Length: 309
Length: 229
Image 1 (tube, rainbow over the protein chains, first blue to last red):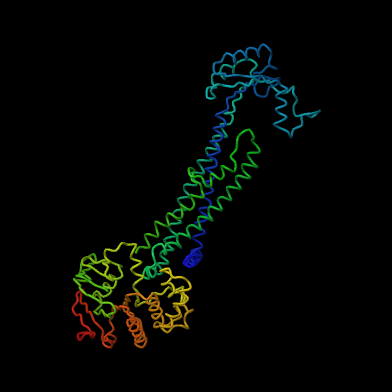
Image 2 (cartoon, each protein chain N blue to C red; image 1 turned 135 degrees about the vertical axis):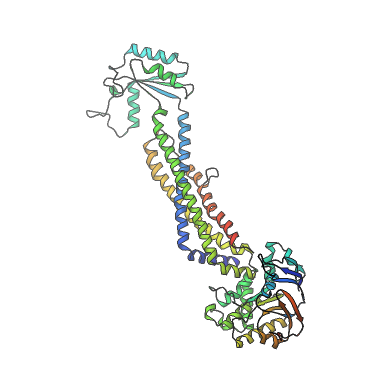
């Protein structure tokens, strides 16, 4: 029976300050979405770093005729050149092991990577003949690639040395920039949300000052008077979080799963478990936790100020 | 029931204290008028009983308990045992008459069935049974004050405090209100009423405590308002 009273006060309170509550919801929506995206990008960056960190391989691509990667190539790599290259690799202390891949193997890999291209017949995109040979070198310590690179770089017959980490550095940087950018924007919006909530409480409390006074006179406990305010704060938080969660889900589905994840399949991408972490995780300020905190805490602090015995 | 022991209340700033060494003892079931000019300390005395403020020195007892020592969170409980009626009625504007009275019961946790039973009884007592669904601004001053009295009385409190309850009413309505308070007092509720109204005090011949600049200058059973006023 008391619950009925509390809920009817809640409905009234929401209706009376509707525009302010909507403002809070919208601000929460945008700021929590940004916080969530920042968290997801953070998780992606960690995943990528872990993955790349485990990449122990460096690839020595050998020259082909009309090699598009290196003007210094004078034609297909010769056997003596290959022997020298192999020797350099073998003698290098940082090398753990290595193996050779022929044109045919490279061709088969290309067919796998680009299933949509036509590899047969007259208008074939490329043939086995066009593929380069290569040495795949596994290092003992992935951070010590410089030694082998410099040893092998200048040798005749070497087209270029492929280091996955180097090539992905720009992507890495972009992810970091986006991450910090969204954290910064989120930080400002979270502050805005806090100020908005504080203002809403203040206005609501002032508007109801007379009523609150009468309630105190009749002997209503502080909890009885504060509860409708707290519930209003909770409702706004829940709606804001729901909207943000929806936006993040769309981001996950169309941005990652169907988007980048499809496009770049050699990197591990964040999945739905990471999405749930962004929502409920403790350490990354899960938005389902942050949202209510942002509204309920200021409400508690401010209503104490206006509802003194 | 209510006891003031050498109570002094000074507000910050210069000037005389609002109450100065006031000692008054009110027994259960009494009907007491507090009279005096504006600024004599009447309202301050009532506020002290309600624990809206604390004395600068001295002690205030309600039902045997020293209330200036009461912890903040216990004060609502004290107030639930005291019915209050004010000059400006203090009704919740967005609630009907019945809801206003029911509010006092909701606040102490009475069940819906109990409220449904008690509120009409109380409204009947104050003569407003057929106005239960009206809003306060649809009522006359006298009717609004009756609602306030109904709300103050619905929980059958030990004490009823009235601060100038007839201040905004015409003489005819005032008589009705005083009759109500008298009947309530007859059921055993201690009534403490602050007032300016000479006529009422003279007519009812109850105990009169007169304050002047914060001091008790007269405490008379069956008193009149006073000659010099």
